[in-house]
Amino acid sequence: MVLVLGAGCNQVLGLSSTQVIDAGFYDAQIDAPFACPPTGTGMPPRFSRLLHQVVVQPVFEYTTSSATMRAVAQSPSGVVEGPIDDVMTPATGLGGSPACLACAQLVFPRLTPEGDGVYGVLSSMFGAHLALYRRAANEWMEVQAFGTPLGSFLSSVTRGPTRHLMIYDGVAFHEYAVDDGGGSTEVLPAYQPGDLGLFNLGNPMFTADGLRMVFPGTVVRDGTTTTEMYYADRPDLAARFTTATALVDVPVVDSAYLTEDCSRIYISGLGSLFYAQRL
Image 1 (cartoon, helix red, strand yellow):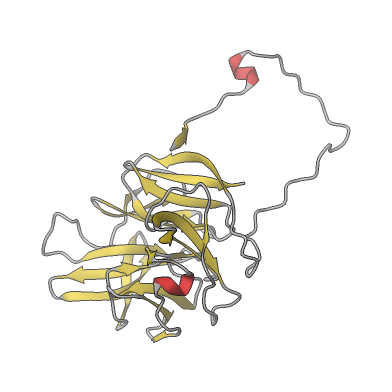
Image 2: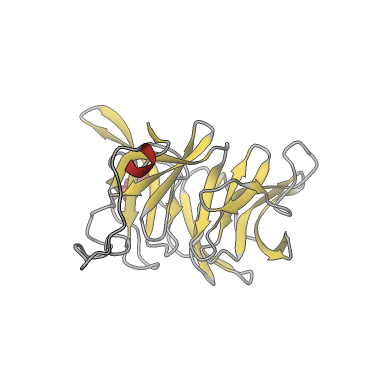
């Protein structure tokens, strides 16, 4: 992995003199904002091999909201939150400390794209359920418990009010449409690795629109097993995802998070959080 730690300008380093001069005209067009590749083209976004270290904390399961510029993640001490690319602190109300064995714990915390809620699996000695939290003053409060069957993984959630999410039940990944008001419906058949052209399939994460997902996957070519990061898309929420395409130069990790404009992909590892920038 390549780590970008910092940069300096010529004026600070004294490498050349600088002078303030008004430009007579723009010599280049303003860069267009990032946008995800059109679906159905088979062309995934390309990312730089340089990894930017943004949060020097052991955080993982990172999700963001561009609407509020906030993020939520898991850490060894519990669920944390903070501004995007900044220090994260304990999220009051989102589960107890892992040191408290009798306390209910929230795992797989997923910030909604609107930034107004957090989904997650609330687990205790009495069982587990899918939960939705809303902020009340400075504390998160559970406002909805769902009867959706649970498993060993919960993906990021899409934009509401009906949110799509993926749950792994130990055999396959099942997609659900979940109403913030309490209803849940499985909308598509389960995904097996072969449905995406793979031998094995890791934990997928949705973009905010639910039309794209990224995940680790394994293929077997000429007797050789290769594991890479993959990307798949679909034209609308009622459709199936297409055959996966490898994401070149992205490290293989679970729960990588692709921003809704496909400009960054966030990955966790080495006790830190990193992102790769879109080329």
